[in-house]
Amino acid sequence: MVVNFNGVSGLGSATIDNTLPGDLGYLGFTLVDDGKFKNGDLAKIEITEDLENRLADNGYLLDDDFDPSFEVKGLDEVAEKATDIANLDDIKRMIDEEVNRSYKDWNPEASYGSRYEIKEEGLFYRQFVRDSSDSQFSFNSATNNGNLVKILSVKRYYGGTENKLNTEFTAIIGFSDLFLDEENKVNVADLITIKDTKDSTYSVESVVQLYEGYGYNRVEE
Image (cartoon, rainbow, N blue to C red; front, side, top):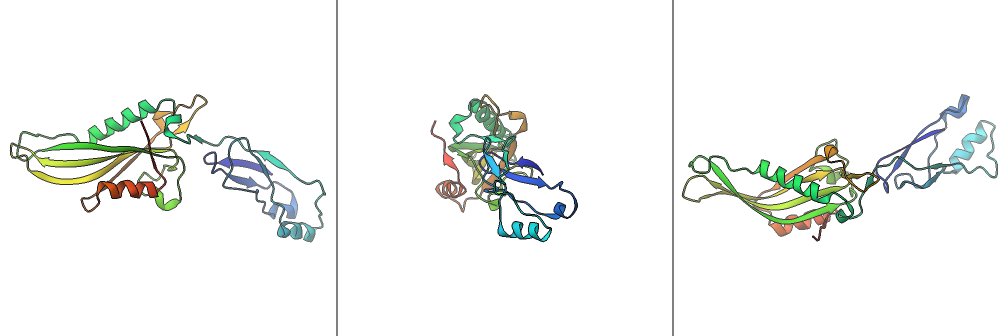
């Protein structure tokens, strides 16, 4: 059997290729605690009654000491807390740059232009995705593990001198896939952008509660 481990450490899963000859090649094997592996674990074959029966049907019995294990390695590492990330300040600066690009004043002196007023409501981090329904706010290529976002109140005004409010909303901007290297640094070139907005029917407090429900915790700076 050839075993490969995929995903993030703490939620790792295994892919098993069975290279046994003949009818044994059709046997399916599973590992105990598949889907919860972390780097350094020893993953063991799950000996089920169905497996033993299928082996017996092919004329095989397991040795009493049959207990193969595989070292779990190669899984991506994500920080338990945002403050564990060595280059956290770099990522925060990148979020600010993304905010400035997304909400940049445009011809603010002209009546047809627009300008923005932005207030930061907090920085939030999530180590692991809770379930697949929580992945709607980032691109499909993101794992949604190791997420860091800022929640912001945004007011958009018409340009000109009247200072007339156009619209207001809550914005969520940040990054997913903050994978750590051996020095607890994140390769910022591999980050996946997260963007979402909630209209004025959502209060800032409700948006914060929503993201806390998705497993995010406020980063105390």
